[in-house]
Length: 180
Length: 177
Image (tube, each protein chain N blue to C red):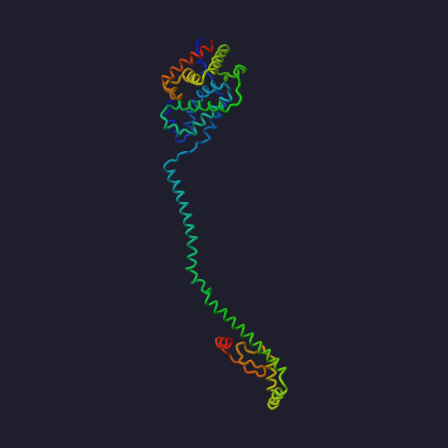
């Protein structure tokens, strides 16, 4: 038989049908690697990247700008945080505390002095008290016994033996006297 | 060449799987035969054929700028796949010890047993030739591919192809006598 005829008979070789169908469906469903983009795909892709960057920049600006805006708006909304006024208020509180403490101490001394005053002083008192009856002594005693009833803003003397009537004075006056 | 092949190729490049499916249906038997005659084992031939068309489908965009026939491009891919296959192959099976019936990959050959045996003998002889002789015999005499397309596929001139086929037939006759 002619060699070429025998070679041509090899053309009858065929692949298995199952393999052919399986291979075909696998290949066509495998998809293609998109190495290149169409023009519009490139445009949209660049738009997407640009939009993302723009939003990120805007967010950063908002965060940084928020701090400066806070400072601008703060005086309007947080006036109570003004440090000068806070200091004045704090000082006023201190004054009041000192005055209250001072009144208490004076009253305490008054009580002690009434207990430890010499007889002459006490007799004088009594003598005075005798004439007028018990009103004055009661008055004296009342003043000695109830120191806390004294007005917070009033005191004018430091001597324990005598008690003067309470007078209202201003905070500034009190400050002056304390500083003196 | 397939009728309307250019349009099919353009559609396939655009991503139409059905277009590539038509190309597959036409060229798959040719490539399968080419690979089977060279590697001799049906399983290997199926794997390699599958790889050839998978690679072609996934890289079909690179074809449009080449300027030569689609069949030549497929045969180039097939040759490269076979070369890579032999590089990675660890054990080689001797053809002498193998069952000749195993190499008759199909029973679709409508010939009698004696002719089948003769064809198997020719096929065994082809496998003993140098790779470029094998290529030119299969493409020129089995598949009837024109000289120009064969030259492009084998990356040789048309004159070189004519010379190669002459030498290949001569060598084959020597092996069969």
